[in-house]
Image 1: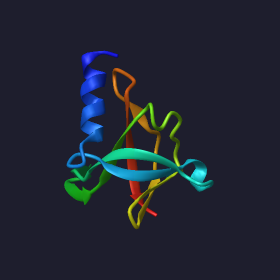
Image 2: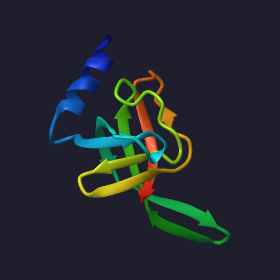
Image 3: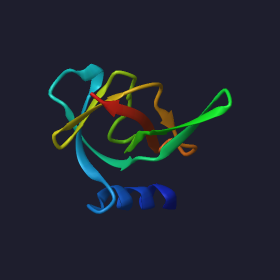
Image 4: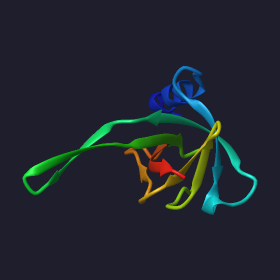
Length: 104
C-alpha cells in the first residue's frame, strides 16, 4: 500500500469527512456497507448565450469497498436514497470512484 492509499483510508475512516452508506448494486439486494464522501458542487453549464447554474451531488467511494459501481445503482445515506447517473469514474491511482448521483 502506498502513502496515498494510506491517506485515503484515514480520510474515509474519519467521521468528519465520510459517512456510512449502503450500496445496492442494480438497486436490489440487501445492500453492502460502504463509506462515502459527499460533495455538492455547483455546476455552470453554457446554453447558447446563457449560463445555467445547477446544484449537483457527487459521492466518492473507495474502490476497495465498491468494486463495480454502475449507472442505476442505489446508494442510501441515512434516510436519503441516491441513484447513480452516468458512468462512475476511477481516479488515476484506481483507488477512488467518483459517482454523479441524484435523489431517488
